[in-house]
Image (cartoon, rainbow, N blue to C red; front, side, top):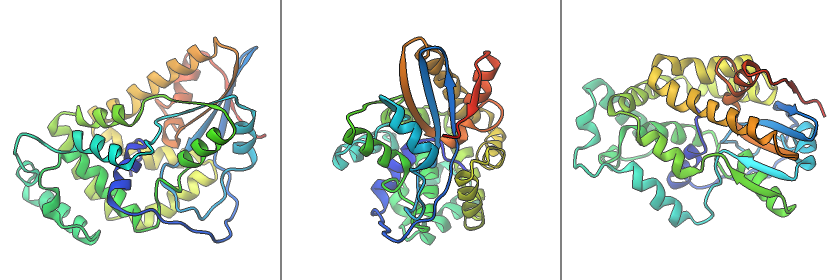
Length: 295
């Protein structure tokens, strides 16, 4: 399974309505890490971009770290204007060359894509003019939406709202448009591989999703690394562009931010803190110590 960026939530916002759940929510404890020097504290929270609102994660260590910070930094801040968001996504999702998506795919992949879209209640012909990366992201987004997961119920939305409400400075490491261009710049062959792999993994989503959510909610980074990151290595160019390069850039950001006093709460996808080539791994290789934050 792949959960690369809030851009997936942006795609989902265009495809399905938001889902609210007001029932009593069980408490879970996703992981938070902390990096410190003499005058700077940086909390690192691994998010799960799409949630169903059925669990209470914004408490305990997460809340303590958030409340202590003067600044909040996210991967990307979702635009408030849905029209602007749609225009931004479509700018990169639609292929202006006139070539259709089915023309880019072999017969087996075309059949799998058609089946996945029909299962999600979408006319496959509506995807004819989209690029392969968008189709891959949409397939995952539509599939998880059937389980009630949305970006509006995800951590980024709650963190942004709470940050604005408490007067914290809010910034972003990348931004939605940068994330969209990251997908769009992948060579077409890599985009097709990404779609093929996504379609193959999609058939196991019903079994994988509860396991993945449990791993996130218990801070099981070993399981997260196995489920979120290992599959990427089958497509090295995608692994490099969507995981390694971004983690290296974020590690640089953390290292430079330690030169400035203050307390910062950083929230990015949990996969970026899991396993080899993760942000935590890169920080350790550069001699920076971190620890699991326990409140």
